[in-house]
Each structure stands twice: as C-alpha cells, then as structure tokens.
Length: 252
Image 1 (tube, rainbow, N blue to C red):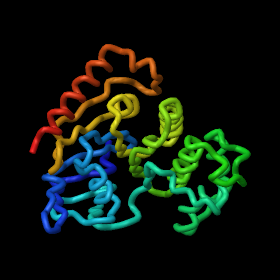
Image 2 (tube, rainbow, N blue to C red):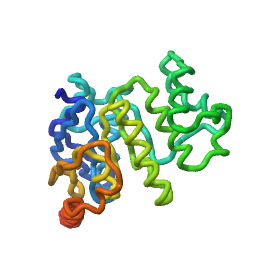
Image 3 (cartoon, one colour):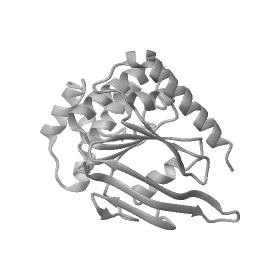
C-alpha cells in the first residue's frame, strides 16, 4: 500500500521574544485509505502539524510529501474539517456544500444532493444553517469536505463542540460515510476512546517539542460498533494510552 502522506524529520520553532520549539524531528506515514489519529497533550503541536501539512506555514526543516510529491509550503493539497463547521449563514445548505467546488471551478450539484441524501439531509438543500442542529451542521461541513477533490482529509476535533450523545452518533455516521469513500484521514481528538473507536492507528505525541513516543495499532475490524468499547483489550489500550499521555505531558 502506497503512502498518501509522508513526513520526514519535521522540526519547527515559533520565533518571538521567547522562541517556542514546537516539533522535533517528527516523522510519520499515512497509507492510502488509512485513518490515523494524533493524540497528545494540549499545546503539543497537533494543530501546527495540520498547518504545516496544509501549507499554511513552512517548516524550519524536514520534508512533507503528499502522493510522493514534496508539499512543503504549498496550498491545495488537503481537504480540511475544523471543529467549528464554518458554514456561511447567508448561503443555503446546498450552496454551502458546493462552495469548495465553486472555488476549484467545477460545480456538481447533483453529486452534492446525492451526498446530502445519503447523509440523511435530503429535503434540507434550501434550508439555512441556523435552522440545523450542531450535528446536522457538522454533517454538512463533512460533505463539503468530501466534495473537495483532494484525497487527504485533515479532521481537527470535528466533534469537540457536540454533546456526548450527538458525538457518538456522529462518530458512527462519519465512519459509515468514510468507509464508502476511504480517503486517507489524519484526525485530531482529545478523546482516547474516540481515537480507539475510529482509527486504524494512533500516534501518541509528547509535550512540545512534539515527537511520537508510541504508535498503537488498533486491533478491531471494520465496520465497528460501540460494543468494542466494552472489550477487555479496548480497556487495556485505553489505560496504556492514558499512561503514555500522562508520561508525555511530564516531559520537558
């Protein structure tokens, strides 16, 4: 299986009155169609990794390859889903969904309507974002990401603002949609249980300057359901990751 994303020895420091070293020779791989999660302490550099991969900032040293091509500092290589849905309130749901396509110059409204229907949002095409619940708005934002032509998706805590029951429903929904599409995903969450439930692999980051202190292979087949959270191995892995995060948070 080929690598969709390859990061080699990435280091970055934010310059200022007091320099802040954020990443220290960080390397990782994401295979084509793989779902990989970053877990680490708050402020450990997860969002910086996203900004570097997305080309919003350029690393001090190291290389980023997407589909085998060096992508340092270049835009347009990824599809991005933030924690907040970022829907434009003056545009209808359908118009929000096709926004990325408008930017790239090829609009397929029929494909947008099919995805909205598949997402349980058929009939809401002409509605406005303020009439939708938080979970429905995140579905719209994810569909907008799916309509982006890029095959590498960065998901930055997309369920962080949702209540627990909606969050569980959205986990199942996103996995169902993803399994039909199988793009490569790099996912950020602060929830150990969410990472174990959704991922193929979990990369544990230390405190900054961030490095990968452990890689966890998640041993469950797909499709999944929440019964796996009651499994003894799930509980063991959750405890192992918790201890690793606590240990990593104590590193200086």
